[in-house]
Image 1 (cartoon, rainbow, N blue to C red):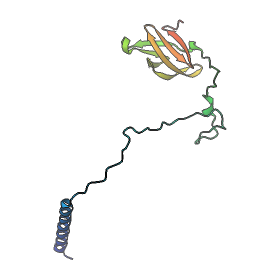
Image 2: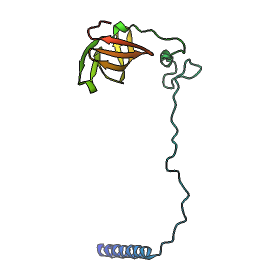
Image 3: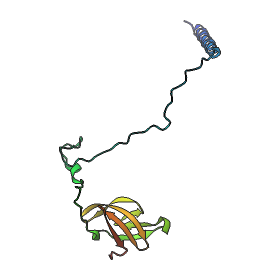
Image 4: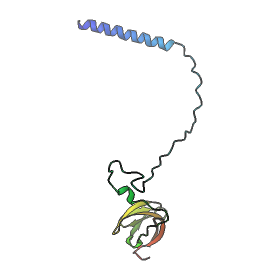
Length: 152
């Protein structure tokens, strides 16, 4: 075929498409049946993840021989006593409504919870409050006041 015939066929095809589109646009629209009532605020289920206490309760699928998932399990009734002397306030910053405290090179604001490295290992520390030259921290459910300079 020659190029001119292709152009004519293309123009005829475009013309047919435009006529079909105009025909569809002119058709009367029928009313759709009323939709059923959909709840406006659906309840989304929350995921719950329980850490296994022993290998019989579950294991890590990627590292099945690992004992890591069972090391951090807290047994009810038994409290882990932590030596608070391993925590040292290095300094303060900020203004009183938004004051920050630096404990063992980790910065905390009121309500923050982070891991802090100590000579005993990593400790999960929750900063409950900051008062001038002291900070109230919570570890494993036990609260303690740390003074600036390491004095209790």
